[in-house]
Amino acid sequence: MTDHPHGEQGAADAPHTEVWHGRASNRMQWLLASIGAACLALGIQLAVDSTWTSGIAALAMSVVGCIAAGLLVLFGTLAFVHVAVKVDKECLEVRCGHMGVPRRRIPLSHITGADFAPRVTPRHWGGWGYRWRPDQGTAVVVRRGEGLVLLLGDGHTFTITVDNAEAAVRVIRDRLRVAALGRPR
Image (cartoon, rainbow, N blue to C red; front, top):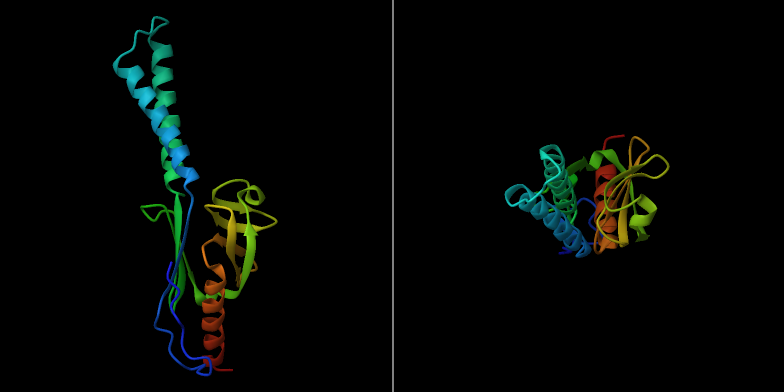
């Protein structure tokens, strides 16, 4: 994670050309991914070298079930091993996993505020991953700990677990303040 300085304190009209990067990761997801890989391997092993005597339908259902469950667990967990957050002069971008999918770009013009959440837990959101709860909003939760809460212009919130979330809040608030000063009244 890199926290770049963002302009001098007195220069409200100074251009913000630097980019803030943050990330968070969860090693526990690797354990779950290995369980998914084991389930996938079991399905392949059943398909290749089976002494199943109960009939072909039961074997086919077992093979398909193991392979499907293994793929779902494997890719579902690898997508949320880590999250990367980037804040530049135009938007905030969130990318999950090694392929960067799911990804969400939120223009700074759609953000009305940013708050620091000292304790975000998967239990409050119903687990790890990309989450939505009607009473809380949307979140990307890859681990327990500090997080960034964005207040969006449509009244919704978007929470992201990221290391050094306080620095992200400062950068976003500074960018919003500069944008508000630059708008014609």
